[in-house]
Each structure stands twice: as C-alpha cells, then as structure tokens.
Image 1: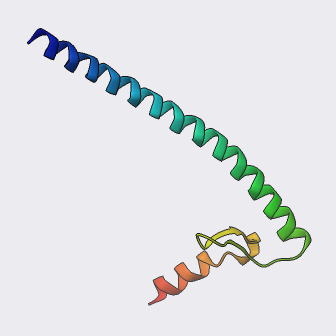
Image 2: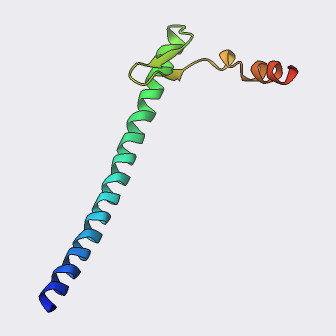
Image 3: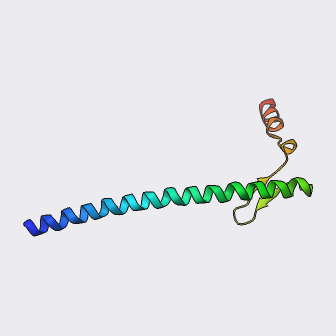
Length: 84
C-alpha cells in the first residue's frame, strides 16, 4: 500500500511538472511567434504600399494581411444592412 501511494504521489508530481513545462513552452512559443508575425506584417505592409497592391492574402489560411485603410467598407456595409 505504501509503495503504491508513493508511486501515485510521484506520478502526480511528474504530471504537475510536465504541465508547468508545457505552459512555459507555450508561452515562449507565443513570444517567438509574435515577434516573427510583427516583422512579417511590417514587410508585407511595405511591399503592399510600395508596389500599390490592393490586398495581400496569406495563402495557406486565406487571411487578409494587407489592405489600405481606404479599402475598408465596413461602414458602408453596416449602413446598407441597417437600411433594410
């Protein structure tokens, strides 16, 4: 019984330690990824402006990564929707 309890206690402690390591890894991965994304957005924005692109999409996720502010039609869509 004592050995069984010791093994359970050690297993629980190991699970806690593993959870802490996973949390640390996720935090560090998020920090590294954030820095890369910021730099990529800056580079994309510079290219979009200098080469007069209307929009630039990220291919694998179909995400809009660049569009000039003048292309935002949100207000028009809301007004049209509210007019119905």
